[in-house]
Length: 486
Image 1: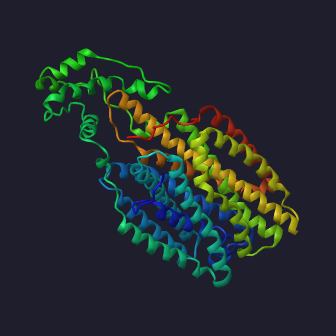
Image 2: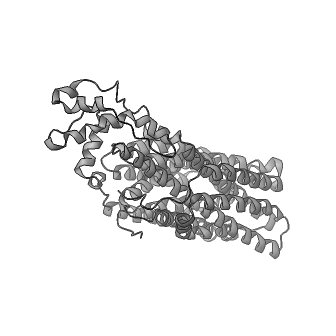
């Protein structure tokens, strides 16, 4: 069972997603007011602003994840993200030129990368029981709360009080977020390890290390030579681990303390790549990244196109646009349900079902052409179902990334290694894929000016349908019982 504690990052993730969604419904209306953008240029500049967010996240994700994995505490990364968020809010609040607004959006993307990847890593480090699906579902719920509240609050406040008042709610959330951070008690990652695990970690960082304080366990320590001999084979094996023994290496270590002074590079080479590179080379991880990328292309393409299309077709104001977009975000509140189903049936089935269903629904969006109540109701129903498909996709994908990191660590432990589980770097890769979607989605969404709304929705549906194939072939099924035990 998932239990939320003070060190959970959900409040931080909620803040970032609220601010991310705060400006989306008001951009088509506010750009002309604050930056003197002409009506015919609104779509282009809206797409550029949304893409700037992705560019910032692409640069910020690898930097913050490496920093978080090497730092003694991840709170430093969180505080840096808070400062970056405050800077981006100031830029959007007082900026009156497109250069300042683009810079603010870029900084916001970099800060989001630190919170999402490091926050997920903190949650995964602290969670030691079964229920990964519910864990990811609860985090998805916090994302949904920000996603739902952001566009609605932004659209309503802008409609009644103007642009300057839109960011008051964001400043209030930042103050609350700071209070949560000051109370946050991050779990010491070394506390999760027993003394033998710490010795193994020391051996990973230095192959010559021997724990002489345990006189009776030197034979156990010597297994590191054997472990490194099989290191490369384990990472390339996708199904099982083959037992490999190297008696000569083992005996040379156990014979005497002087024996370990010789370099072990000939028989026990150090890992050639960082965990991030190793994960990136795995086909299963690549498909998870692809799924996250396509997910964000579609959702950001919709967010960059729908406000303007709804304004043009139905003549809606910012308040009414925000309420229609709410239909897209509401189903994400069912993240815990999607997580439970992912544990029950495995991520593969849910992700394939989500992409296949979304393909049909995206093609159906072409019906938005006449300003009447029936089409508004149908549009809301389609957006509600598309939001459900998006939730069924993203929660199981993050579950599968967690399973993959756990299975990689289990294979290395089978050979005697006890490495840290590189959750932060795995989620950073997902943040990079998400950022690429943020970057490409609005730019591809801008093609609607040239190909039309009907052709754009057909292309988005086709892209979703094609994504089903690699997901069906490579994503993991139902995990084995006990995969999260440590």
